[in-house]
Every structure is written in structure tokens, then in C-alpha cells.
Image (cartoon, rainbow, N blue to C red; front, side, top):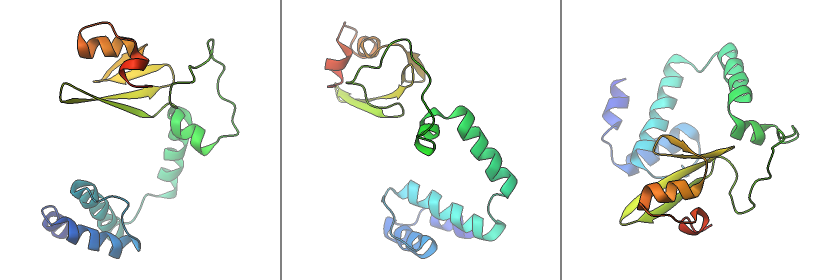
Amino acid sequence: MSEIMALKNAPVEELLRRYKELYGEDSSGNHRLYLWRKVAYRLQEREQGSLSAKAKGRLKALIEEYDPINNKALRPDKPAPCQSTPKDKRLPIPGTVITKKYKDVKHRVKVLENGFEYNGKIYKTLSAIAKEVTGAHWNGYLFFNL
């Protein structure tokens, strides 16, 4: 535990070195907090062991039941549920995060199966989010450059 806390304020170069040492490969990112968390997890895993087979099985079952994004990625042969209206082809796949910088503020919208999530709220259309952001009516596809 003391080693993990000592690494919390370590420079990125040190975290990258530890990551490679623990995982046997270079990190795909260089964000300090990300690296610290990954290194800390691996150190804890080495000291205390990883998840039990029962826990891993339960986790997999929860993903299959409640996570439609990973559910599709893990089991692409499973047919998608029927939709009453077809998805607009301009929309990215569910799980994608759309970003828009407006008046020096970066806005992030997550595409869901049926709608969008913005600032912890669910919206049916991108236009509703664009109106929330700007205060004026916008075509959502134009506002988010889709």
C-alpha cells in the first residue's frame, strides 16, 4: 500500500516505466492518473490475488444482461432487438461519446440505444441537447457536426 501511495505523485516517466515492468508492454496512454490506477491495480492484484472464478462469472453475467454496448461487442452473432423506427445513419453506434466545443466549453454527449445522455440526464434528441447548451433551437445533427 505504501508503494502505491508513493507512486501517486510520481512523474509520468516513472509510471510508464512501472507500467511496462508490470504489464510487459508499453501503455497505450500517458495520462498520469490513468497510469497510476493501472499500476496500483496490478500491484494490489499481485499482493492480494485477482478476482475469483465465481466473481468473474458473475461479472460476465452482469455484462451480458445489463451492458448493451459490450454485449454487442462480445456476442455480435446475437440479433439486436427490433426497433419500431430505424436508427438514423448519421448517428454513431451506442456508447460513442460526441464532443462539441461551444463558447470555450467542451460538451460531451453519450449515444445510447434510445436517446442520448448529457450532464447526467437522458434526452430523446440531439436537438434538445443543442437547445439546452445554446438556449436557441438548433438542428442537433448540424450543431454536433454529424
